[in-house]
Amino acid sequence: MIKVYLPELGENITKATISYWYAEEGASVVEGTDLVEVATDKATFNVPAPCSGTLVEVVAHEGDTVHPGEVLAAIEEDTVSDDKTEE
Image (tube, rainbow, N blue to C red; front, side, top):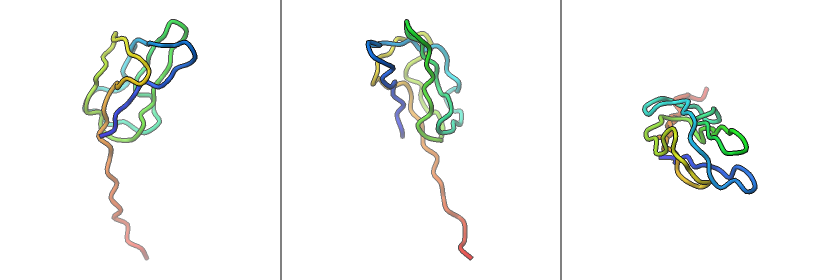
């Protein structure tokens, strides 16, 4: 299971508010796509999915205040099986 953390958002930004989740628990997510939007007093940021898989748990909900380094969610990473046969 891969945890999704709030990254450092910039100098002097110590907290953010969860604005919007682009995916719900149980949804498939793709690495690099926007997962959650957070707002600070200076700007709005999108946090991308760190891996492809299933969003299994949302820890920080819309309206919650979070701090850099805090866990926002958990993703069950897709397992890729190599079924290709070499010719």
